[in-house]
Amino acid sequence: MEPALAQRIAAGEVVERPGSVLRELVENALDAGASSIRVTVVGGGLDLIEVSDDGQGIPFDELPLAFARHATSKILSEHDLEAIHTLGFRGEALAAIAAVATVEATSATSDGSAGARIVLREGKVTEQSRRARSPGATIAVRDLFAMQPVRRGFLPSRSAERAHLLALIRLYAIARPMVRFSLTLDGKEVFRSAGLGEPAALAAVHGAQAARLSPLGPRSIGDGQLHGYSGDPGFTRGDREGLLIILNGRWIRPKAWLAAIESAYQPILPHGRHPHAVLYVSIDPTLVDINLHPAKLEARVRGDDEMRRGLGALIRERLGNSVTPASLLANPLERPRQRLLPTPRRSLRETGGAYSQELDFSSMRVHGQIFRTAILVEAGNTLYLVDQHRADERALYELLTKQESHVASQELLEPLRLEARERDLESIEERLPELADLGFRVERFGRRTFLVRSQPIGLPGSAGAAVLESLAGGWDEGANWRERLLIDIACRAAVKRGTTLTDQEIDALMARWQGCAARAQCPHGSPIVAVVHAEDLARHFGWP
Ligand code: ADP
Ligand code: MG
Image 1 (cartoon, rainbow, N blue to C red):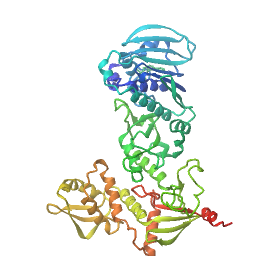
Image 2 (image 1 turned 120 degrees about the vertical axis):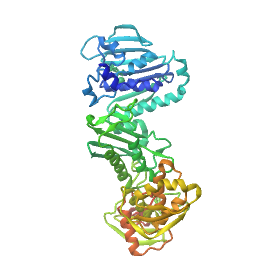
Image 3 (image 1 turned 180 degrees about the vertical axis):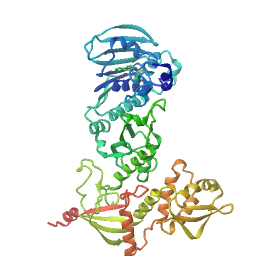
Image 4 (image 1 turned 30 degrees about the horizontal axis):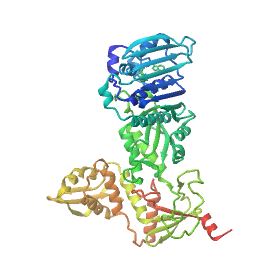
């Protein structure tokens, strides 16, 4: 490779831990077009990491070259860098691995020429011979960091590394669902995927829980194509490892896209929980720059913002129109005493684990308010009891989040006053520009006094006051503060339970709620609707 090109793509590859070795070997196998990749690990990867593939292989005379620095068969010129089709392109990995381990590689190509074997110790070739084998390559990395005792001392524990290696293989199985993967740890096969496509790969990774992932898309967004799977709101984890973005077959972690997915889920997930979602994005490689990040985990994509918004919108829509079958009548927690009706027909088990049922308001009839708390709605064969406070909260919240920057706002006839606490002054002051973007013009007025002068058009009169109340609560929520503030405003401005509503108010509320993208859950994640099915009533009463 020309020195100038080598310079442009060099990332100064360092082998951090066994997981880095595994990644590089698996990615090489994928780049070689393997349809089956077998991984064998001993001792958390320190004793052995072996990756065996049935890809195109490496010819005998090129085998030493594969371990030379900046030797890659994947990029020949700067032109190739414009459209990278492979996972690797820097030609650094095998050289870096060979420098800190003993490596044995055997390989054969499918053109009938003899296979080859090579052994390298600390980067130097110590053996090279012909060796017959089927087409493909097997790279075995032994005694990793044996000569780097300090590095070895800083590694995660072997059991932590085993978990990490398993997580990586699961990730690749999802990223490349048409490739068969297997992982054997210390003599025991712990993972196997069939290479039969996305649903099979998700099932191999998640087992029965895979049924909680529903398909999304496909949809064209800007220059890209998007499809994937999103988990139901009850399928969560304490970390963000369940969120996968696969861009042209490569796992990436673009912060803005991940944040968009999280914020689509945020209103319906319990605090501190994170969703499961897998998004496959395909974009013409010439529009993607992957050579930004040393570990190639971020990418610059043309139309990035559009894709980010599209991702969020797709997930919001998916989550928006489904209710959990745990209805008022079916959920024993909500009716601890005696159950009025048998469990609805659509239990989780009977629907094969499918989580939710679509809300169907094609023929909606609003019957009125009950208990001064809920609205009774009939649609098709179902009665819906809609929590008035939560429905309003949802509608207000969506109105607020839909507001693009600089929304139309209306002046309040009389500004509202807030006396802020001394310790909140600074954080309130900092957030005034963002509030203004949301349509709330709030001004400092004297040392501890703020005035709300305007609020977005379309919000009830109480919204301005709700802003003040929320601000008075103090907002030290860091990155999440905006979302939390909006939820809080919506909650405070929404009609309370116990409020009698006129028919007009009911109709207006139902219309606003019906227009929501996510009708099933309030922004705090609680259900808005309880359902009663006509069949269940019929069964209960013994109607024919
Ligand atoms: P890169 O993947 O960036 O090209 P590597 O150091 O990972 O660099 O690999 C160097 C070269 O070795 C690759 O360009 C490829 O030609 C060859 N190679 C490595 N692993 C395999 C494999 N499993 N099958 C076929 N060729 C391989
Ligand atoms: Mg590589």
